[in-house]
Image 1: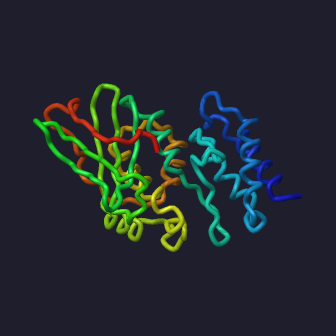
Image 2: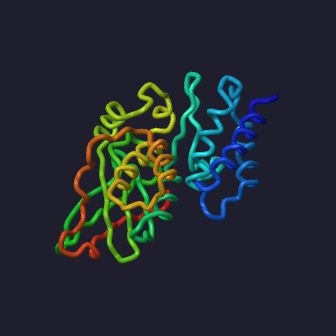
Image 3: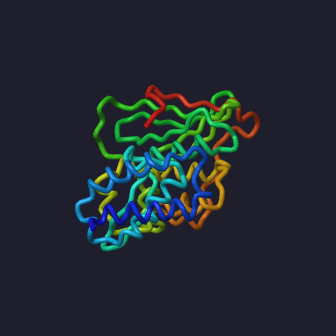
Length: 246
């Protein structure tokens, strides 16, 4: 029997055994169809255990993320499988589960030649970002911003050196070539994940486990203090000439 079929059968068994962990309105049939299409793209799937793959697919279901939309991924690495959330998935989860309602949350990479400044104007912290068009220069850093429905804003910044140190010291798969292939996306995901540690996320126990397992890193230190206006957070501001998605 093909490994895809065994994996989907194992996944169905998990749905039955742990149906209480699935989000409200979960569409099991659609998720199985999407999982089947996702598995069809994996060339060496027969080198991995169907039960292990199903466990990772189930984590995506628990979080309400879509593998086909690249909101999360099953990581296949030297005979072992793992689960990893993507940048798009991180944004989706923060917007959906933040206790303090979010209008938007996003991250940007900053390349050599782009204009990026942190400033305080009349007591209001601001982030100014003006990227060069079609800039493919070296990545020098990344920043993430969360805009709240009550008018507040928090943000986090990381230099390229900081991101590399996080990858080396906290990365779960330090020898994985994913960083070489998707450095920009993973840089955004790194700073976004650190920003999310400052947002109160309302997860149940199963979701929390899946979310933590989906991290590329094993953080064991607190992030830098949140950068907000201590007197009037609602007056914080981000200035960027880019759209606030992606």
